[in-house]
Length: 173
Image 1: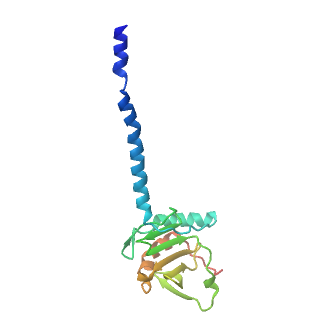
Image 2: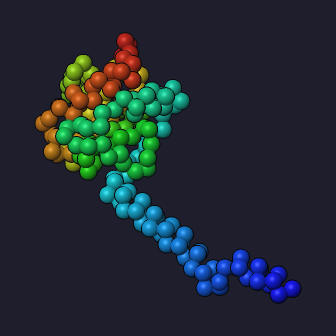
Image 3: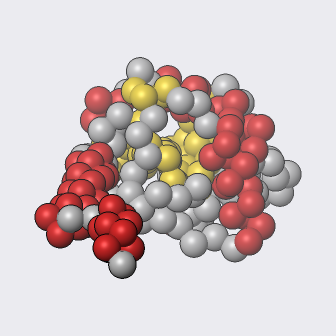
């Protein structure tokens, strides 16, 4: 009987060790949570559009075609994460796909530009400029802060992805 006790005691974990084990996963969980919140704390929040299923599919294709760098800014998508939104820099350039048709498109005095074969409605905002694609199956909106107020380079850099993923329409709505 003495040998039976010895074999059991060899397999027991001392009480002191049993208490320390749960603390390690808890500390790791806290560290991971802190790291995730620190990474997303600097990312702006952007309203995610709610297009129909057909437009959503087009927008998902666009998300996969977007460049990693636009206007000298690295891609840094806004929160909440979505295939319908993308961003570059510290919200210097933000793209939303599947937005509703802007009211400004009905205005006969609306301003527009073309960049690398893609037409854009131009609208001034309080913090910069907003552009929305024209003559495409889904509306793609690109907002740029004041650093890009007179610079169409970001639109030109996005043009290939837009042309590849968002088909042009022939009739004007």
